[in-house]
Image (cartoon, rainbow, N blue to C red; front, side, top):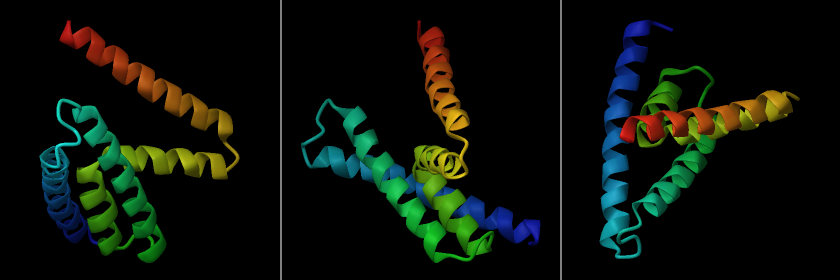
Length: 120
């Protein structure tokens, strides 16, 4: 695959995904259900992006420009949690349960610790 079209696909998809993230958050907050509960809007968006990512991988040719645009670009810009979740499931499917567990626990613990230390 030519790297320039791939880079453009990810770039454009990422912009759309980031805009989708912003719009999804604003939309959920506008419904009034998430008032002062931004974390639940994030939760819902992460689930939506995770579901979308599975369908992208199921319905697009592997390692194609369209898959890069939709998966890495749009879904990645919408929520990196979708990729994190997908990669964890793939590790489990490959019989690498302990690595999956270490990946989840260390990702959450290290990110939490970094934020905790930096916001003090």
